[in-house]
Image 1 (tube, helix red, strand yellow):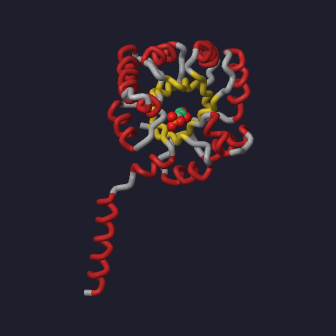
Image 2 (image 1 turned 30 degrees about the horizontal axis):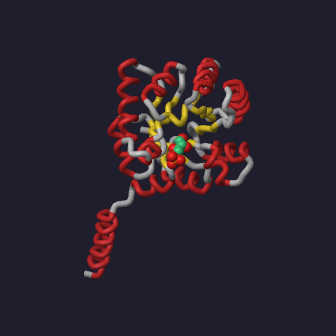
Image 3 (image 1 turned 180 degrees about the vertical axis):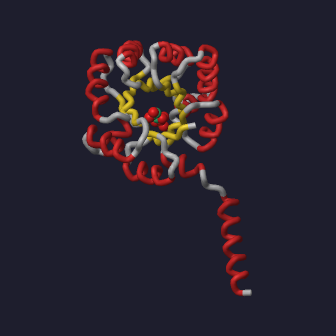
Length: 215
Ligand code: E4P
């Protein structure tokens, strides 16, 4: 399972890269806007740190505009993956750009039918948004499970990127479901390795070691 960080914050990305478990980054216009840097500069800085796919999202809503933005972003760095919304125009753009060899991450996926369509259009990744479905009282992880089953049935190559993950249990559930990738905020990554018994156990070992040294 690959771990992507869902952020454009350079400090968080550096810290996660130092942990040695970071496989890529997903950004979106909201995350980029939070950092207050010029767009291209923000993406290039990220690409300089992470040796893996970096999703860069378009803001056009028509297929022509999406393709134009994709052609602008793709040459920025070999690891750029273009992120398109799962709309009618997004689907058209996905087909053309995938055929050209530009890897596409189809974002804002909220149904198995949308996932089926983007796989047929050749997307490299589909991003089902788990947390946002949970927010409206739908079990978001059910969507991840359904997509994985459908893709298995037909041997689609599109990777399932579990997105909008809000807590460590989401990561466990995505892993159990067999998601290829989990993208998570930095705080979720940090919570993954925290356990009170680890802390307490380590504290006790160190205390005992101090006593042993004195005897
Ligand atoms: C995925 O690529 C999105 O950027 C992200 O997971 C959205 O998460 P949110 O619902 O917490 O904003």
